[in-house]
Each structure stands twice: as structure tokens, then as C-alpha cells.
Image 1 (cartoon, rainbow, N blue to C red):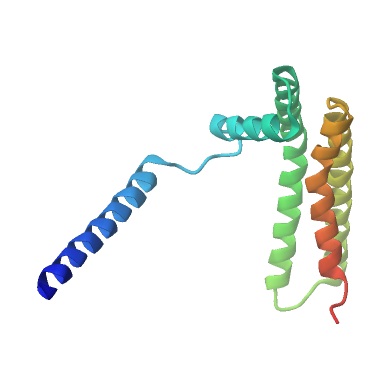
Image 2: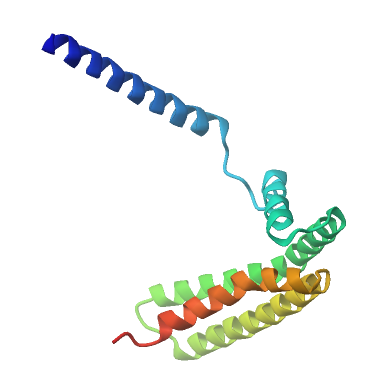
Length: 158
């Protein structure tokens, strides 16, 4: 009797493990990573926006078009910023640090980062203008939480 229970438990355990492996394998085989411009990501974003902000179809389409414009407008700046950060990394790999070049690179990065931040704030304002007062509050809540969390992490812990 004891042996039959152990065999049954082993069969159930093997069945669960095989089921888990098949499930993981299926999702690995079926699913590819979503690219930023992939329609599945946009649909998920649309669902999230529609659910959390109670957006109308027109608002979703306006925001989707605005997001595409934002991506198109900021991409060249992000690529230049990436290139300067790569230059900084290359400089750090050298045996001796060229202070003048370091100052130039850091200044360029700071300037581009400020330009990008300004663009983001303007874009947030444009997106916010598409929403009513309640939607604006819900739209800004994650941003507020993120900024405040960073501030908390920067304060000294006692």
C-alpha cells in the first residue's frame, strides 16, 4: 500500500513538472520580446491607458500619435547622447585621463540631457492637455511617485 502511494505521488509530481516544462517551452517558443514600436506593446499601452485613465477611443488615438511624434523627435537626440556616453566610456578606458576632453564630453552630455528633459516636460504638457482634470491627476500620479521615490533614495538613511 505504501509503495502504491509513493508511485502515485511520483506520477503526479512528474506530471506537474512535465506540464510546467511544456508551458514554459510553449511561451518561449511562441513569444518574442516586444519591440518599442511593436503593435502588441501599443495595444497593451492602450488597454492600460483606457483602463486606468478611462480614455475615449479618440484620446487613445491622439496619445498614440503624440507618442510616435515624441519618439521620432527625441530619437536623434538620444542617439547623440548615447554616442557621447560611449565617448566617455572610451575615455575612461584610457590609462591617462585627458581632463580637457573629459570636461567637453561631460558638458555635451549635460547639455543634451537638459535638452531631452525639456523636451520631455513639453511632451508631458501636450499629453496632459488631451485629458480632463481627473485623467490628468491619474496620468501624473506615476510620474510623481517615481520622482518622490528617487528623492527618498537620495536622502540620508538614519
